[in-house]
Image (cartoon, rainbow, N blue to C red; front, side):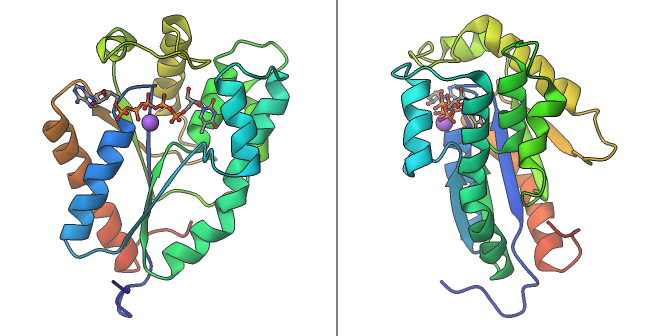
Length: 219
Ligand code: T5A
Ligand code: NA
């Protein structure tokens, strides 16, 4: 389906959360619901493990290769820059993009490693200039609960202490509203799949209507 000529642009919506918070499940449900409501939708996820850079990230996450903390951080960022032009063009055409993780994960997971040479400030800098989301929805879940969802797998950051630090950094980020203007919407991800989906949808629908009606700030 082609976007209508009357739409100013699509929205850029990011879903964030800890490992196993339900991001992939909810991205799918949100895309389906927005599509059914008549919007044109595209989806994207980070890391995008299909590109050459994404393959290096995948290998690192599976502990098949070791990498300096700065080097892997820059690869995660480069993996977003690979899609930057596509994001801008796609929303300009009138498609709303629902994105599974973005630069918030980038800066926070790296900062949560507690490497004294890798501050949150340093971690932010390579992502400066990437398209800014219209809405960031954080799926908030206690790492103890996340672990119960089938238990963590074997990937690099799937340890409870790491996830606790990640969660705290995300919740701190909610209050960082000055220069970055991060308007993060926090949603309780401990409820049922449908309850979480309904909460996300009501927030997302407002954002999409504002973008399509030409009333949202630019990306
Ligand atoms: N990372 C990422 C960085 O360090 N820097 C970066 O810049 C970026 C972008 C991989 C890792 O990379 C790090 C963060 C990660 O550690 P990933 O590929 O997105 O990132 O992998 P995960 O986030 O680990 O993906 P998961 O698949 O584990 O988590 P999801 O997508 O949040 O969860 P989902 O939807 O797959 O659901 C997990 C399980 O829970 C169930 C589902 O059925 C499924 O079994 N579930 C629920 N159960 C009960 N109640 C609910 N409401 C449920 N919702 C889902
Ligand atoms: Na996922």
